[in-house]
Image (cartoon, rainbow, N blue to C red; front, side, top):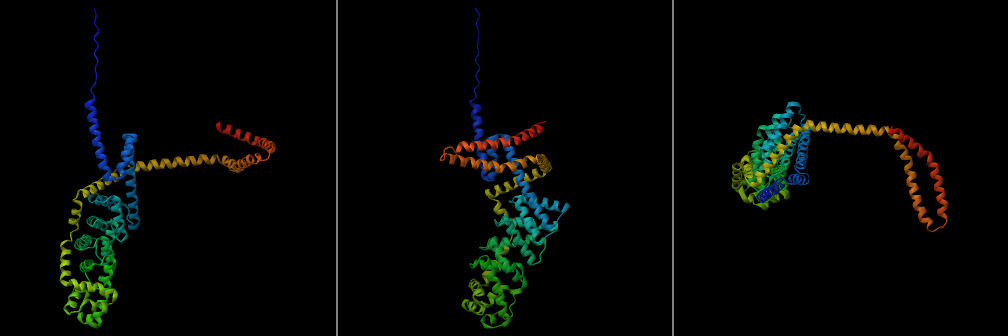
Amino acid sequence: MAFTLQAVVALDGSKFTSGMTGMLASVQRFAGMSMTMFGGVASQVASMWAAFGPMGGVMAGMKEVIKVGASFEQSMANVKSVTGLMGDEFVRVSNATRAAAAQTSFTTAQAADAMYALGASGMSSADMLEASLLPALKLAGATQSDTKLATEAMTAAMAIWQLGAEDATGVADLFAGAIASSPANMQRLSDAMKYAGPVGAAFGMEMKNVVDEVAAFHVVGLRGQQAGTAFRTALIELSRAAQTGSGQVGAALKGWSAETEGLTGAVDRLNAAGVDGASVIQEMGARAGPGMAALLKIGGDAMRDLSDKVTQNSDVAKMYDTQMGTLSGQFTLLKASVEELAVKLFSKLLPAFIKIIDGAKNFVSSIGRITESFGFVGTVIERLLPLLIGSGGLLLAFEKISAFIPGLAGGLTGLFKGAAMSMAPLNDSLHMQRTRWQR
């Protein structure tokens, strides 16, 4: 007797399924973290991946590469327009911009904005632009401010005191120190220096003394533009009083020099002479007096202590490293590195993108030439369109009227039949023309 042995083999996929489930969960957790870090970019890539698989994710990533790269390219074109740089010098500046972005927490587009601000300030050589960019970005990162704002504040001060690009780091250090030592922030300090800087420089004061005393006005409660205006009006009124020698203020300031003593020296003299705040306001006026009276209260020693504190804190690199030392700061640096990679990919693929665009433009032009050869069709449609629209309206009106006037339908129907017969030759002509096209 013959026996038939049948074996049934079954594959146990439970472990594989469990492993895949765990892997997918890990991917989802990473995607969630990426979306938090990079915002809409990761979200779009994840959505395209889910909808179209790996190829969809690649296409979404390519879209972001083009977006980031094209934005940087346009920003650098703006830099070229204000600096006039060409050839190798422009390539140097472009590479320096990308390198500065990779070293800081800013994107290539933000670094390009800072470079544009440097160029707009009058810097036109590659050496000056390269030397000034990193200090400007460090200042913006250290003070958690906009790159354009920090760069414009720094370059404005450099222009007022006629400083070169080699002094950019020193100015950034000084601004960082003032912000770290007083209630000033980058916006407030920038606004204040617009008013205080030109007057202080005109009276021969060093930038350090002006910044110290602007910071002192912030300490006594005057912020931003108020601090700058208080400094300006006080310096002008004190100089006038010292020259005339009139009143208590003028007598106390005999021999005083804004260049060598500044507002701090004036405070020392007024306090030593026993001039109180009320007298200062009365003699210096409602605009200049209140700020100066506030400085009298804290005294010259406190102002010198603040100046020393500003000097101690004047280290923009250290302040920047502190800001970037947090987890949030590290994520920001990572995001900047990813954008630099996107720009690098864009620069490599740019020739291919240009060829694709040129091909698309040629295709569109070809379609345009073809449609021009069918111009008479457009003429026929153009002439028939009013008639068709008018006929449609007439038919609609006919339907409404015939509902109320029996017998009208029959007469108008005959009229439309006659019109249709008159259109028959035109239809034959169009049919013959269509036959020619097909041949």
